[in-house]
Length: 275
View (cartoon, rainbow, N blue to C red):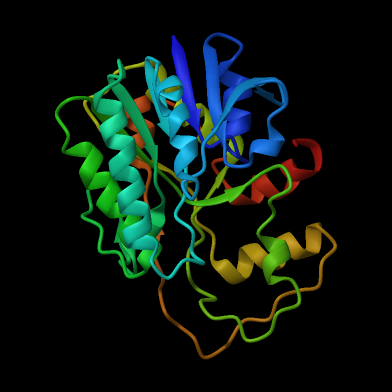
């Protein structure tokens, strides 16, 4: 199978490396200077930057594949992110319609749910941020196009390699949401889920890449700080809000998988030996 990955970043590059063992893989980078002799770290790469209209000349090459992994998150720094993301996704969609692609995997986010308390793969999202709105509108656009089959994967907070969420909270004071359940996924599990969705056909079209266990935010980040030798975070004692819990049981059942990091505490230890 020939697989194109639009977005060879922290996740996309590692996915490409994994898939290249058994498939022909190519992908895109938004920085032209990172591509050397048509390759980026061993993967066939082409320049594609949504802020450079000339780079869309490479779109035909990138979409000449059997399956596409669309892995470009919306920029939270842009005030016009919903408009910008929607316009560029429209260009992508029109390119897909002119290509031989029949299978699209869109990497979205659990951020589409806003402040919903307990959600699963069949819960209708109610985004409350511009980036969440941009993602949900794209989900609907792609899922509702009958010319190709779209599967949506919504990862939780990403952990693995050099990404350790505990570093962002270490030493901070008055952090809200001490009782909130954490919704995390290790990159290895996100890769495994994406690989299964690419290689097989499922009636389910929306998948959640989230570890099935959800320790409380204060418990997890305190233990993480201790194990990683970081300054402990301090949580606001008066905040007793419940937070959002993202379930993934339907994904695990549909794909018949067992997550390597089903408990977020395993991710802390794993960072010391798995990079």
